Structures are given as structure tokens and as C-alpha cells.
Amino acid sequence: MIRTRFLDSAGPRLRRSAPFALPVAWGATAVAWRLACPSAGEPGLPIRIAVGVVFLSVGIGLVLGVRRGLARELARARAVAAATQRVLLRPPPGRLEGLALAAGQLSASRGATVGGDLYEAVATPHGVRIVLGDVRGHGLAALGAVVAVLGSFREAAHDEPELAGVLRRLERALERHLRERARDEHPARAGTDPEHPAAEEFVTLLLLEIGPDGRLAVFNCGHPGPYRLGRKAERLPVGDPLPPLGVLPLPAGLAPYTAARLLPGETLVLHTDGAEEARDRRGRFFALDAALAGPPGEAPAALVRRVHAELLHHTGGRLADDVALLVVRNDRARVPAQPAEPGLRRPRPAPSSHC
Image (tube, rainbow, N blue to C red):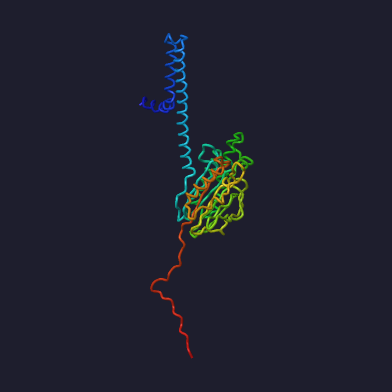
């Protein structure tokens, strides 16, 4: 039992040191040969060449061993990042209550697959509810706020009958995160709330609900408005914006904007500001509205891939901010006019009387 535990604990150390075993063996052989062989100290040219070849082999083997070890660590880190993204920013289901969905993100941090953008879509008894947001800043430093907002949304979307209740739950979750972060960064003030926790971080977001008839209820907290794709790409009105979460308290009375609809066959594209603020080498902004005008009937997943590809081509692969897209297409059929029930005849008009 003790031997088994020792081998289990020593296994990871042995695997990490495996790439260096061959260079170390070469080096030990070279040193032993240099010390034990009398001819190794002779100044002849063949001996010098042999010694140079041995030590060169040791150096090459050491470099290759280090490179192999770094490659393994990089592959392991990428696997962890991919697993984190699947849990944190899980892709929405392809179909949800008659809606076709797709989403994707591009991180501005080199080597990172997650950043400061967030999105989620869930089917609830109150309708399909969607959130898409952008945490101030980008990259791994913004993950704490992403976790706080998404975790709260995944619970509140099912629990709260009104969309305003969901938004207030998101606000409270972010406030708790900001207070905890302020305490961690200022341990001398432990036990007291910071005076201005909102100065640390804030989140812009769109929170919307799609009813069975396609009617939208939308809260816009300082976020760019979505695009509606029908005959053309147009900015969808979402009402007067509220302040971003974490900047100012939400007003006492909250009422979503309900004057917009997503008709059957239309597509809604939610995005973060990194998509419209991306620039090329000459400083020209990315024309998102033109990029969205793709072929008619384009699938949401294909639209996300195409726009991401055009965005990377425009910027040369150098993004200044994270970019997230969430696409929703209304595949619900139009309700046809109901025919008259069989057996029921329309009343005939009364015959006209003649004098």
C-alpha cells in the first residue's frame, strides 16, 4: 500500500522529468568519459572533434527536451482553457422553443479562449431569455465578473416571473463580486465595504425575452443595440438605455422596452462593442452592418463563423478588445387563418322581398 501511494505521488514528477532524462544521460556519459579516458585530455585534433561532438549532442538534446516539455505544458494549458470555456461560456443549444441560435467569442488576449464578454440563452416558462454583456476591460482579469453575472442569470431567469426581477438579481450579484474584490485588493479594510466599489469594474449588457408571438421585452444597460436582419440589416430600437451595471444603482421603477418584435424568418444579432470598434492598420473601423448582410436564410452558426473570419481578416488577427456574437433566428411558423369547423355552415343572407 505504501509503495503504491509512493508511485502514485511520484508519477507526475517522473512524467515532468522524462524529457530531461536523455540529455542528462548524455551529459553524464560525456563527463565520465572525459574523466575516465586518459586520451580525452590529449590535445590532438580528433580528440577535440570527438569532445565537441559529444557536448554538442548534449546541448541539442537538452534544448529538445526543454522544448518537448514546454509543448506538453502548453497543450495541457490549452485543454484546461477549452474546458473552462465550455463550462463558463457554453454554446447555446442549436434550437430553443422554435428559435435557431448560435454564439461565439474572440478573445483579445493572446492564447486565451475566454475573456470579458458573456452570453447565455435559456428557455423558461416566461419565454426564451437571453443575456449578452461586456465587462470593462478584457482577458482573464475580467473572468470574475463574468462568472458572477452568468451564474446569477442562470438561476434568476427561471425563478423570476418578471424580466425586471432578473435584472435586479444581476445587479446584486455584480455588487457582491465588486465588494469581495475590493476587500481582496485592500485587506487592511477587511470587514468594511469600500467607498466606491463601482470604480473597479462595470458591465454593459442586453437582457431580453422573446415571447411565443415574437414580441421582445428588452433592457439595455449601456450596451450597443442589436441588429435585425430581414430584407436588410437595421438597428433594432430598444428604448432609452439604463446605466451599466456597477456604475449607478438601477432606478426604482423598471419597465422593459416592448415595442419591438422578431417576426418569423427574421434574425436578431447581439454583439459587443469590440465588433464595431475593431480597426485595421489604417485605422478604419470594421463595417459590421455590411458584414451582417449575408446570403438570405443563412444559418446562425454560419453567420457567426463568417463574421468572425471577416473581422480577423480586417484586423490582421490583432484584436484590441474581445468580440462576442449571439445570433437568434425566428423559425416559428406563422399562424394561418383558422378554417371554419366542419358541420358549421355560414348563415345565408335573407332573401330580398319584392313588392
